[in-house]
Length: 225
Image 1: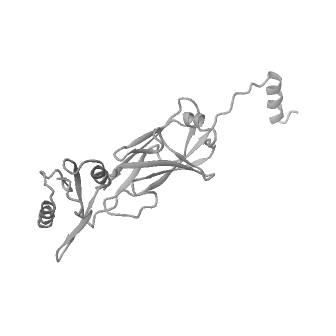
Image 2: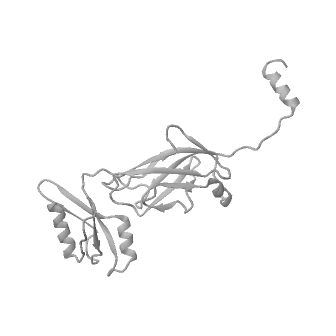
């Protein structure tokens, strides 16, 4: 509490105004002047506390006037674990196969733990075995940072992208935050996830077999012909 009090005092000197504490890790401040540091830390003989703006906060600060905007100042203990994203849909017990057909949209779902710095956006993409990368979802693969699922209409994508069609192959689902796909592990920030693999296929049209051909095939398999 002593370290948090010192940080509150620093924010007040910088021109911010500390509102009532909203949670264990967040307080609300008016936008400080331009010289106020984007991150800082305090330390004592036994521990330290790292501080950083969340990506969502930085986006808000850049877009709104200095006289009226507000943002979240995020306090991240250096001992906090990195944020984890876990896929909940489809299940990962085996590779899921999805049909490229009308009305056969795919829903990818997930939850997160240990995320303190909430991202502004998530980027979701599917990387094919053939090397091609495809944006997942209706908004070119970019969704709100608080989203917990995305629906991908692969049939519509196939129809609207004839120059880069989806192949019948295995894909890896990639999800990352504002820092990009290769971002380093960091306390309180979401780690990129590429744990899910799935496959796409195109159904074949039905071909009728004549009675004579079926009779011949049955007897040929039995060794009668």
